[in-house]
Length: 134
Image 1 (cartoon, rainbow, N blue to C red):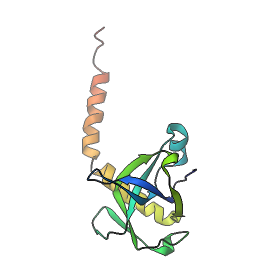
Image 2: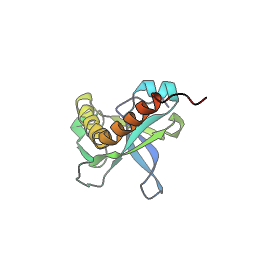
Image 3: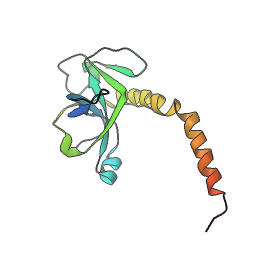
Image 4: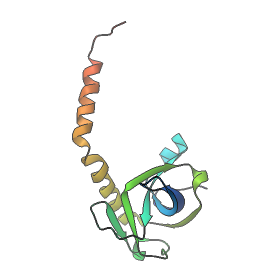
């Protein structure tokens, strides 16, 4: 099944405890990732209202089709899938709201690790400047 960025789909999501459960998920990767790697990335959507810095509350006004329950995007629960793992398409998120979700994901994944990433970059740069041993 073809998926696009901003689609809300159903997949068998692996939960943090290692168990699997069918959940809605928001496709966050763009079509280039799917074409190049034959995978896409999605974040879990849950009806559990944990209000923390990782959660984005959805309303039906944000969607192309309403969801049956009040739902929340769990921006920290990111997984990769192939298109054959998609059970169904449910809805899509309107572009202006997707931008807000991308911002939360970016802050959680990249700003939190920016100092770590800088250290890794510095190490890689250092290694490039080492003389060849062979």
